[in-house]
Length: 340
Image (cartoon, rainbow, N blue to C red):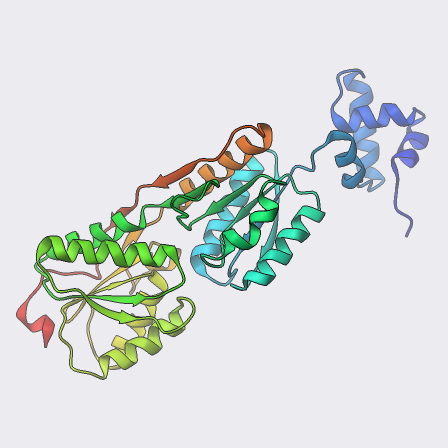
């Protein structure tokens, strides 16, 4: 089938090429009656605008690139949904890519986005090395990092206060009477997880508690890996009454492993997560967790990127959002039986 061009629409409408172009771009130089007639005719003829050609003229594609480390991760898929909604509300569309936590693939996708002439890029980095690998490109296209606190790096990022979030979690469990709180899922290679572990350790020191850890030996967090680590953990004698999971996905894996051995949550073991993914609020789960405000995270990230796009002299900004405790039913006041 032959593609319908703007010239085909002009011929069918009996007007000039430039008149059709003005109608499609919303120019005030033609009457509303002419515009409506041309737009209806374009629709009837199944005309699709040549966005590449338009971008060359308008100097913008109205496209934003979004690179995630894992589309399968519940937190990231929910965040992508909110980013898409926020971008559309501001007149932009999203091109979504998945780096699979591979820094080299991440770099290739970044180049791909630039080649597609996106106006800017939102990136959930694959690891702490992402900034150095992408540094040669960052001066060429507006970029905002999401989720990973780059600390003193002179690039824009938006993140939640992971350190404070972990402190809030320990404070909550301490108020419930728990004195033996295990931190589950500590792992290397992520500033986010490093900050959460540091916040947990600082809160333990404040309350005079002994930090206890179950390290994540895998390269990322998931329900599957949380389940596998929890099975190993529960096979040993238990010396804790509460678990603070580094992510909600880890917590869901812990729940699965606990159910298999008849360990009741929260009667026998209190469980606290981090992220507040959608599944956390489901019946029979009802996970108490530390919330990352995903909608706000998406809104601030998109706004920050658009500010950079519209003002190339805007510099960089570091935005740290406040986490919040979401109380459900997976935690209970400490009782001596809870450590048996």
